[in-house]
Amino acid sequence: MFNKIRYNSIKAELLAQNVQLILVSKTQPIASLQAAYEAGVHVMAENRVQELLKRYEELPKDIEWHLIGHLQTNKVKYIAPFVHCIHSVDSLGLLQEINKRAAQNGRKITCLLQMHIADEESKFGLSETELHTLLKDPSLATLQNIRLEGLMGMGTFTQDSQKTQAEFRQLKAIFERTKQLFPEQTQDWAQLSMGMSGDYPIAVAEGSTMVRIGSLLFG
Ligand SMILES: *Cc1c(COP(=O)(O)O)cnc(C)c1O
Image (cartoon, rainbow, N blue to C red; front, side):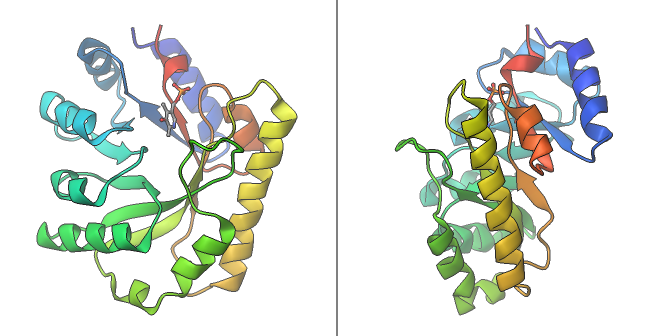
């Protein structure tokens, strides 16, 4: 079940540091999410398109939905009518498709670029070089229906907090370096989405502005 007391205490702790708390609703039963909504949670995230669509159908329409998992180009059209922010953009082609579908819906969709910071093969994301190549592409400036607001990253799944800290510090450094190198392309950059149930205090200490927390807020 949704743990309202824990949610409120983590939310207050984060608010004091200007960090946004995003409730990750994946795998939770609908009744728990309904309870979260009634307790005032109006920002939620899913990591799969199919689940996101299902939740959107089932829950009140004033929830601000974030997609935090891998997105295939051919699925953008399904979520473009309502998704608020996509944290997991990892190519220019995907940005172009999001822009096109957002335009068709008369919307502007917030996007974050996902960086690969963990040493696990399975995690998606761009390298710093790939990020800079993407930002140099002149076509980026033509995308009027997306707003690029920053970066997202996931740390390695480990108990080694020094390793996690080093990865988040590296992501923050990439964020700052990129803003210096590409001031025009990054003028709207204000978000660094990093931190989950197991590592969010480290992420916040290293400069996160948005944490994505699921399991810790249930049960
Ligand atoms: C599942 C997930 C989270 C939340 O994980 P918890 O450990 O349940 O807090 C955060 N970010 C992404 C990308 C996820 O897939």
